[in-house]
Image (cartoon, rainbow, N blue to C red; front, side):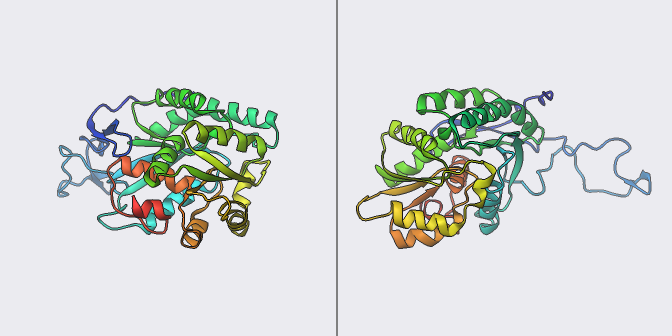
Length: 317
């Protein structure tokens, strides 16, 4: 395991707007930064004595991530979540939005992505949870200010108590705060007062049953579930949008189900385009996992502006 970098204890403490918890934000631009070695700035190999303007006593921010530098941890098989989060950033530039927000992605090694059986799910759980600590250590090398876990644990851990225990263990790996799907989902459902939900997942019946238990532990009724029974974690990214739309319209958002919201699990199954297309049609929010986790991270970090092209949640709360 790599040696973790020293903890940055210089910064400020804010209060998360959704959790009400204190969040420590390291000052990653504290002087002296950037570090410049002697003899200083050079030109053609010689000290550029006439070059002025770099005051190392003040410190300089990250040129790209000058508002917030997020660390994102995802399974090595995931090809969707980083794309979704960067899409939100690039679709919401400008002084009042996400200009200056950056993501540093670190993968968690998951060499056996087969989840089509109970044994496969158990193997994946050991791979991912066993690799999170190492990946967190790697992520800290980029000096992030806040961390995001890009995996929905409810399909590999049964019930909120087991998930909370694992979350507390993960939190102990650094002095930073985290955005977890379980916290984000609970906060988003509270915004809408949603009590009857439908679940859309890439998983088979065992994974869906585990997900249902988590939401029931939150006090939410899962009226209907739809799962694509994908047996390989990497292949989840290949589920076509038309199939997701069909599942929403024909299996979940029916008159008989009378749902308050649809919740989508599985970070490798992008729902951004489907959400934007179907929410106006079905009249209820679709809480897709990737934008919902990022919404939680942004709001906890004080980014309050409405965000576009990401679903109702990010525009309305």
